[in-house]
Length: 107
Image (cartoon, rainbow, N blue to C red; front, side, top):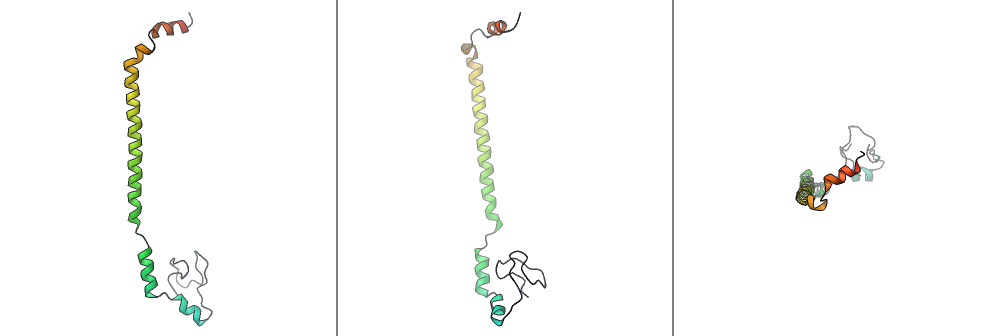
């Protein structure tokens, strides 16, 4: 019995009659089926070369984290500039703010 499914290449349990992932039958019906179940060394090498290591996904997550941090910093900078503008120009925007508030309040 193979330890790797010949169809989907997932690991198999011992004495499995079919693949639990893709459902491929692992019991050979003829001699030709038995021969095709065995993977050649070239196929194994090709499979090993085509599989990418999990380390390649980490730089993408670092890029995403850097992008998020950059966006947050830009938003904070915009807020600081807005507050500085309002503090500096607020008396010119509403010249008599105190009298405006006193008119709005009921007497």
